[in-house]
Image (tube, rainbow, N blue to C red; front, side):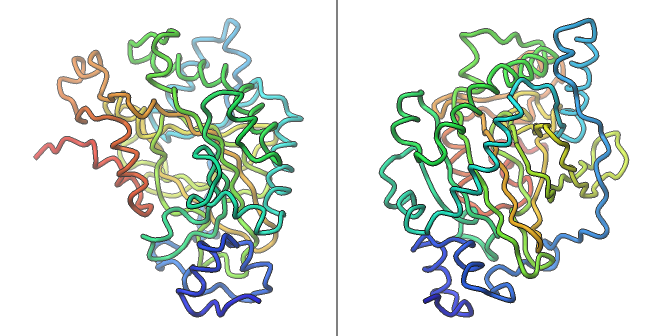
Length: 365
């Protein structure tokens, strides 16, 4: 029997500690959102007043032809402005994209006890974590999301330790997207005067993780968020979203674009992948590239899934603005740090816009 969802500690135990997640609340037949999930008014997403991001997707097949330089310019321009863009003809099989979405739905349809074995406290593998919200212990209001997270070390460990229900398609997604990620990174680093060769690639994307996110249908979507305002901590994120929509990006105040400071929706484009710049790329570029502040709304009609790949440096990697960029800019805007320390700061706090970058910022005062 489900507990009283009005009691915060019994709700927390049911959702977080016992591994029932948001899906467990929804499956119990609630008709209104529990108080613990109601966001402050400033964080609620007004769907009616948001506009769509009308930027057309970038065709990556053209990187191999006479339009190569034009495509690189499109990638660079997107990273310098919104920090988000969509790509088509990306090399990941379309059939695999469909399988990923179906597999995510199947996984989250499993009984709670089958998923709860992967909770951080009891997971049989340090590579796999099932959870809900972001940092539930530190959040004023919980996020309306359950997830399974699978860290990649090598193929053998993934096949042995990732959940059997989703390991094959998740691993295939990681492997078939690698060339695309490398091409994007070559374009973005090349524009900064940094050549990407095999000896350097781990410094930029040596750590990889595949997540499957599940946003159950919500009786009061206007009061909740699926994910709160944040930027991603890593290098590049590759996201498969389904056709339901709900991903919003904030147009930075300091770029030459319309709708500065406004939230725009990244509309689902069939067979496209969404790419966004993470904090590390903003730091290496000394602020030239923008790690995109984004959030996710919930919906009352259907449950939504998304499948991101997070790429980042190895935890032991030292990160600082690239010297050739600092030389050109005349000033370093970020200090040097070890990536694992940045990760600890990022996961030690609730989502709060781009506050994560303050860890590395050099104050100009």
